[in-house]
View 1: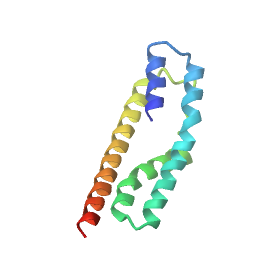
View 2: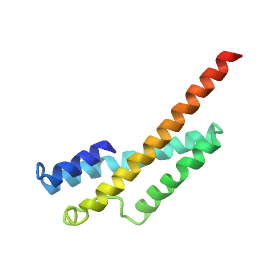
View 3: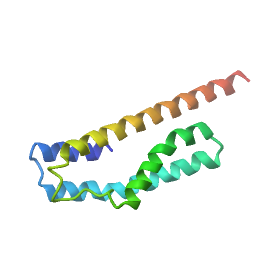
Length: 117
């Protein structure tokens, strides 16, 4: 996620051409979708229902983008969509950081709870 924000910032400041930026961003989109899907399945199969429900909206959004074929960045429209793409990526990054902190909180909480027994 951070890599894509860096590519968009480089494109905005004209350090990189639109084709290279779009190809770098598009290269990592599908692995991110797959990784998040696997994480949701792990939450589901291990019985972490709250974490699964917190991760489900982001999975739904990714699946919706993929099925509508809107998940890739278009080289010809990247400058017109630059502000929207940056806002979208920042929101996604914030959501993933939120999930990370909740995961770490539950991990530490359960580790402390096991020590008391």
